[in-house]
Image (cartoon, rainbow, N blue to C red; front, top):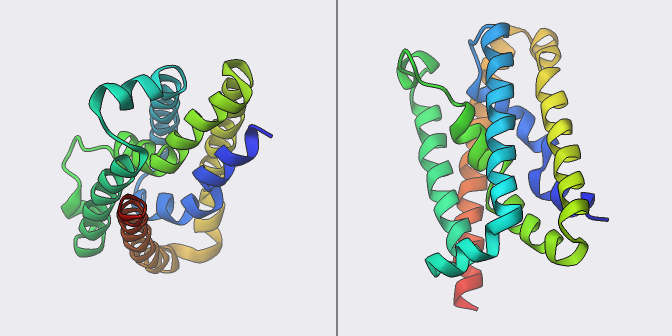
Length: 186
């Protein structure tokens, strides 16, 4: 049961279009390195939250809704940048999207991090850790085989799909901000 809340919060099927959008035009080798980087980043942050999540929130005086709004703002800025600029214009020579936005906040965003805190309370550290590792393996495996989607769609189709995915990323960001504000107001 600890697996399900985290799987739903990470939303692997929903991440694939966003991943394809953010990695459009990358070589297969670069994409595979980025997948490892993103998965390890998400795992490291998740592990910190698994062990210290409540302490960090209490120390900083923030709530999960504050965290949701902040993550939504970051995601919104990145999504709008993705919509307005080509992959060459938005990436410098040493810019990687593995840490931000793929690792954080897409794979391990506010919903997933909050879910980790809840799962630890309900099931304990070891079962939560196992659930986390299994979910991150699913993310890695899915991203690793996302190139099949590009082969089926072709380059033009993949570029069009990437822009549509960026629009969805904007909508997800706005939803994160809206839900955070609604929860604070209630």
